[in-house]
Amino acid sequence: MAAERRTNGPRARVRENFFGRSRGKTLRPLQAGLLRESLPALVLDLGQPAPADLRTLFEAPVDAVRLEIGFGGGEHLHMESGRHPGTGFIGVEPFVNSMAKMLVALDADPRANLRLFGDDATLLLDWLPDASLSGIDLFYPDPWPKRKHWKRRLVNARTLDRMARVLRPGSRFRFASDIETYVDWTLLHLRDHPAFRWQAEGPADWHTPYEGWPGTRYEAKAHREGRKGAYLTFLRL
Image (cartoon, rainbow, N blue to C red; front, side, top):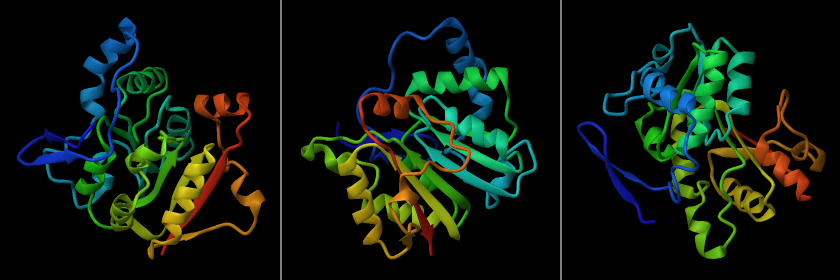
């Protein structure tokens, strides 16, 4: 799928890192209703300029803002936003069925410190102000295992430049995957980027899940299939 031009407000933006399906099985009535009725109040409108202070995006008073790209079933994002009510969270997930699962979780246990975005993460990264985030999480992204598809991986020099622009110095980019080629790919790309430094002193550091890690259904599948997760943390210099 080539880069696709999307119109959202006064400027046209180009999708760079969204490939494949955006929808799966038919949604249940509750999910479809929540997408129709609840999502509009939570979703970010990139047709409007980003506020200089991202904290104003949230109903709850927050002192920092974090981003999770590709939240999947939403297990981690929903848990973290509950563990840290004083932090604002933005979740990106272009797959409609995953967005619907998150909305079901929020219907049962709402979060006033959470906003959502259902399109290509690079569009959001370009919209955000400089040094506006205190962290970015990218967990178990699509690995695009075939060599000819590696160029589709979200971790690349251009996206890392975007992340470096929006992350505050001293903040962290966290990446988890069970695919060794993607872990190696990420380590090489972050090693070569001057704005990031890998925080690890030994193998145990990056084979140990993050504090409070709830696990995800993708991770559970990897474990069933005999693959071990790697949990990398990079400091924004």
